[in-house]
Image (cartoon, rainbow, N blue to C red; front, side, top):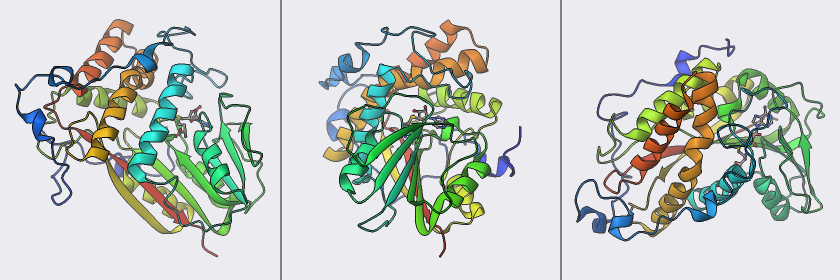
Length: 350
Ligand SMILES: C[S@@+](CC[C@H](N)C(=O)[O-])C[C@H]1O[C@@H](n2cnc3c(N)ncnc32)[C@H](O)[C@@H]1O
């Protein structure tokens, strides 16, 4: 399987024992002191936090095709190993809200006030595209996805196209002021081709922005250890990705290099810490952590089940256990874990 460039260079440094990498000081997330009062293994519920996931799990068995989930199979089961059923759609919309709270805006690239054409690759439920259409009435916003899961009632300047972003594009050259892709990295095999197509379709002076979660679990206080259930889960997921010919993990180095190699300039990476669980003292981060816990309640199975069973050949029960252990580990209030969320943008030179 070839990426067109040396994969090892981008997969990143193997995690060190005890902590994934040297801790950077200066922007540590402070732990809510209330959580430090009780015993080590207490979960959030016992500390008085409502972590009810009822709103996300009520429809989990409505469309059962495999693993209790409905997957999109038009392009083959290993094209997108994540289901696109209502449960996953709820999770995608929740993650959009997490993203807005974390990043503070729909995008970071300085695209100017009156863009004419915007493309969202792997648009999912189309929530970002719809918000962008509202924000920029001057623009025609196109959301593209493998799955027809977008709503029909949308702003007049927004539309959706069913397509595979890895196939040859039919968009005019230099059409878009802004091309955007968020949380699609786990589904992309041929990065150089995708980046070339994005470059060709972007206007000179226009921008591309990639927003991706790095799946390495980290903590500022070394409470995330190698034995952490979520860390074990992430490692296994990485194994499945590599087997599919995709990077095990998406880092800023990977994203910046992908854009630079395609010809984009002024490539800028912004790092956010996305906590899991309401352990941060800071109210905004606490809310984000809580929302991430809700997202995780279906997210681990969404990302893991197909990858573990079909790709790694695991027994469904063992795969289910791995997902449940990851979910349980993230509910431990004494583990102060977070992931990096990277927003990386670049400009096509004039
Ligand atoms: C995790 S969701 C993210 C959705 C959206 N970008 C967001 O952030 O809310 C990934 C989406 O990418 C889509 N996708 C995966 N591979 C794709 C491809 N090759 N072409 C187009 N869409 C793709 C999936 O169908 C899914 O809807």
